[in-house]
Image (cartoon, rainbow, N blue to C red; front, side):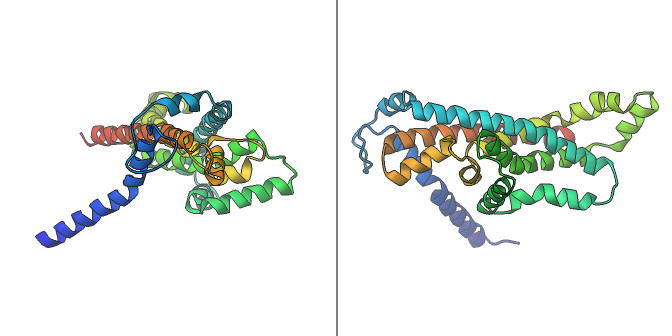
Length: 265
């Protein structure tokens, strides 16, 4: 049994780790409301002027819209391909089944720079010009994993007796999928889509190797920081991106918790 001292030490260590992770994030958010364009602490005052100037920056708006389009399409493809792979691996026994499962999960286990270099080499070998579509392909490769893991975990919790009962009552495979399997997978698909969208929206490493001349939001942030220009606008964009990624993650977390609570009843 853990002693009181051990619990206190673990609690203090956890608190310090959380401070290390989230204090820099909080500082960036505060700087987004800085009335001065000089990042100093404490800030001289609070203002919303940088939000207005950032919104009227055409380069930022173009990069934002491109990132959203790529994330939405990558999420859609990930849901379709990831759920199809999960259904195939769960329902059927075939040669190479374990290899398929391993290959689908592999991109999320590899460092992003390796995935990006591999994709860039693949596109270069086949003479594919880097464009919006190569960004979507790159994002889809690692977003599939999120959907696949969600769906395969849910499929393993669905009793096979429900499918057998549906088939015994005269329903064909499609009707069983539409009336039994799909409704029970709905929250897993939705939470997987939300997580995939959040992951795609702020992925910068893979985007760097697959974007070419396309200027997505992560690349714009990277370039602005590297050149040291328009740092107040960078803080605003980073704050908005964090909100756009945190909200889907929270929604997905609540969906998964709600589903777990309902299945435990």
